[in-house]
Image 1 (cartoon, rainbow, N blue to C red):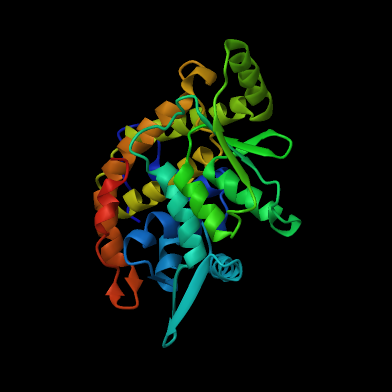
Image 2: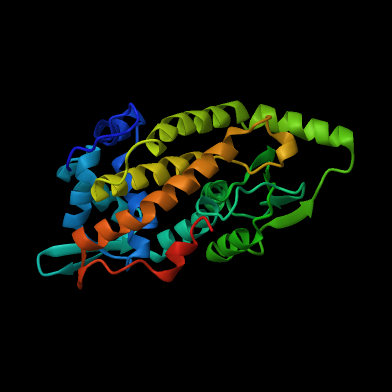
Length: 306
């Protein structure tokens, strides 16, 4: 990767080289981001050698990448196809379903907030053997525990919930309710409950740190190095995803004044659009699948953040 001079005080090459270690980003986790943000948009498959090439500047060794890919295959996140001596990887159907639902939140056309309605799920008849997995799936959708045995989501993500219930064959094992508070005191009590249980201060602090760091990136010269644009795009969407999937998408009336999540969303949207075209050209010129170079991005790619 060639040195890139920045117009701000930040050294972009050092930022990229050190970010995963500084933020405790695991190799497995960043691989999932690469497949979701990039590979899924360019044909779905990538050669392991290209994946090693892609992640090396982030500080991940070839051995660690191979080990992480192997574990993701064991965890049913990746599938493998061998052609000669080369191994190619893609999301499994299950992983693709997970990421598709997450992508609705990550690349939304606007910062999402509730209108005051809540979707409430009571898993009364979910077998004990599936309960842990079920709750984990709902947390990925943005559901959180509102009371013992009750999961709630304030932005009514019905489609993703219905898909998850169907995928897990639990449609007839839960009670789903839709509702809202009926008076001002209930609003106050619910806000207090949410603040105590859902760690909003910690969530906002994460957003503020994200905005601080990537605002410096936005003011830098990002045009000189397509590989650098690809790497920053990967880090950007990975870190935004990590915070966003902990966000409960609460009504604005329940959030702190000048909620940092809105600034983080707008910053991510601007930076992603700045980086998308050049980084995609780098991807299609440098990385390989079974048929050769990765194909151009699918048409839906341009709909991200629109």
